[in-house]
Length: 324
Image (cartoon, rainbow, N blue to C red; front, side, top):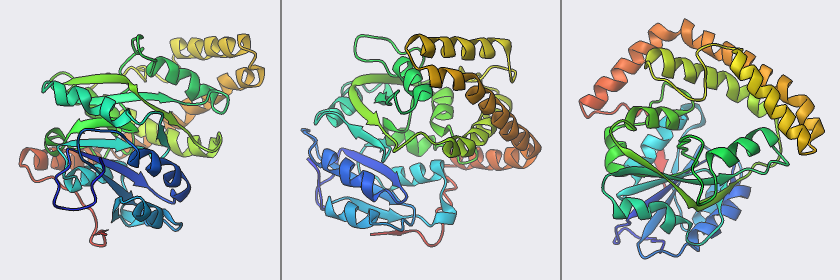
């Protein structure tokens, strides 16, 4: 039951980050409004100064809006802000490109948190069309399998996740990692808290088309993030070996190409090794930049951690932030 007033306190707050997402929200928000729950929930759209009809669409479906200036946007900071704005005790982070496949999606996603106080967070199943993006689509089947199968590894993702607000207010997403903030969050908290995969909370994660431009922007940020995780925090990640162009990784790329070829995806198979070699090159670029700037980042990170310990989180939202 979605609530539209301040008199009823929601159990769940759904947080959606958006920039020029009118088209996606026109499809997503009706699916959220139609969710069948025995608890009240609210929807927040964190609008990064969209230039389309994002705000109008959000209002039409009873979502609350908070505007973040374009030059002040940061993935982690936006989610931390969402946790502060949330009135619910459970915060659901949902991508504007993730579309629930059931009117029970929300109930499934938060049910473990309602039932078991030892669970810190849940994350749901994501499906990516392998015909449009064979590289992510095939991997997602292993990371987010259907019910009855175990994930290859924990791929906790803010694209489709529920987290206790009390945890988020104590352990903010780190704004200095640039990307993979959810992965760092999991790596740091999993020794102390339980994360549960909920395959019934199923979404289609869709983008209009496969875009190399998207990866050319994303990969250097991933390289930066891996340096932050592995060198600054000293954590091991299953998504990155200790060396670039490692023999095991290259063998994996070749085996992936063989698999695609056996499935009749010859064009994708031929592009597989060049695709992943390009990724390694851009990872190196991001890694080296992070290494060069690591003294500054280390100082900022220490200040961030000190603020958390002092219970004074540095959420530099920007003076022009506004809530509607």
